[in-house]
Length: 125
Image 1: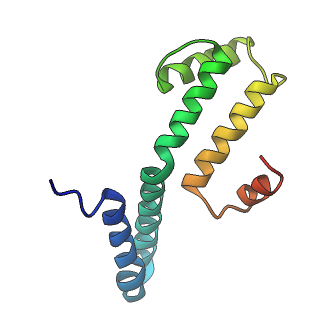
Image 2: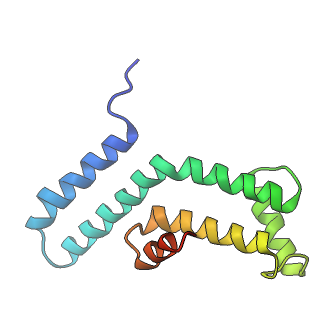
């Protein structure tokens, strides 16, 4: 069985190539698009590394919050419906905690250098 390199290692190798070899040689829109591609590969690498654990934690929080079982997609649909109907609102500490934790997990994957993420982590969120 061939399991090396991993998907994450492949993504990181392409990203490294773009950032260190291709981007210094590019100009204008092509350089911009290469930066966008490198950033997208960074998101993919972080998703491969921690996306599964984030999704699992989100599912566990939703099951506790909603008092039911289901897939992450289904539970999020129920959550949206309950917020829309007014059954749940931000006065619920459990909802507020869930939304904050979910948002921080998603920002950590999408924009790990975002200053607001650092501030939230410093205050213990």
